[in-house]
Image 1: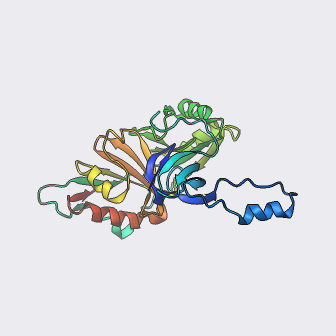
Image 2: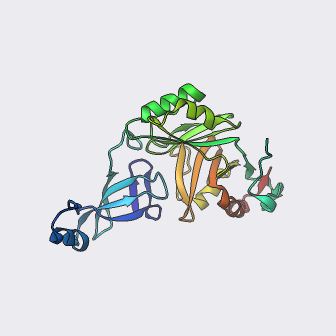
Length: 91
Length: 196
């Protein structure tokens, strides 16, 4: 599996660290317990395109939002979590 | 001034090794830069940091990801968004950069004692490095001056810059330098290599 890092270009998945489901939104600190329970335990378990966080820990170390098809491992997009001032590789 | 000490110790064996009967394919050296410094910009100060580097140490780094400049006295390249590695042949690079880059503009970190730098040069340099790293080392994909941040054996950070049409400089954590040097020498055996 290759992840097209917006800074480094396509790199082997071994250079990246999975950082979890990017579909969840962290509730407010004083949100009801049920909301926190959903955040901590419930997953959408998508069969198809899935938003997730990865870090390019063995490269530029940027945190990325990746859309990956869970059925094929095809990576549909990879972008910086925090949009930076830096242009995309090759652009 | 203290005498710089090589992390290679007994592993440093000058001379020709491996299959050198028909000449050596690469030459390996330890470049021993006087200064190795990382400069990091904040999310909105990338342009200001590159301008400060240009004005203080006359190194004009391009904005394009992974690009850089390779020179005899001073080299630099991008290793991540807003992050640059600079290496100079003399000591004191960090002092000059720190004077030019205030904490509001960016962070300057002296890595001179934390990294080791090796140079591999020769007609087989791309071939040898292709065994060790999952990168495209062809000159079209990895042009002169450009740098790459990657890993050796899935774990150990390696920073690589093309410093000549047939040569690359590699920066390693100093504590892993001897281990990597062994791996590098073994990877060079089929083409023959000279350590000097």
